[in-house]
Length: 140
Image (cartoon, rainbow, N blue to C red):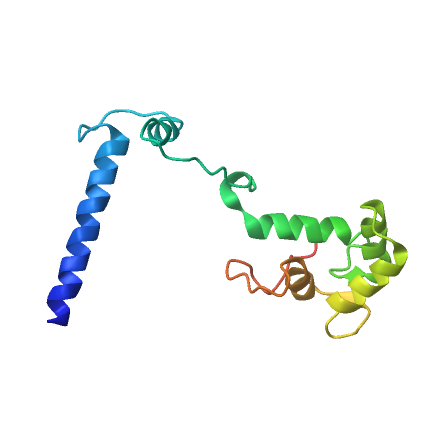
């Protein structure tokens, strides 16, 4: 009973996906398409486009985080000091008092520096980012 129900559910989903693909592609014939063709088809069929936030070219999240870490680590010692972080945050318009509070919250091991792991954890609000290595950037 349950197996047949699962099979029936998959069949319905597959059929709907095939119909949707057929409508969006304008048929079953393979033809060259431009990137904007899908967006035009969605609008033509009464759908709504939801713009995605721009990410880095190629989606290199780890590379972007390492780049940011290195920019903040002006002493090039592989860690961010309270002074280095405060300099960046003040330039962004955050008060020095708030910078102190932010640094204390980010420095989870209370050693006075942000390691790469602490930086990632702070940057992503405590969210685990599976695509990021916890080893951090190599020093140059």
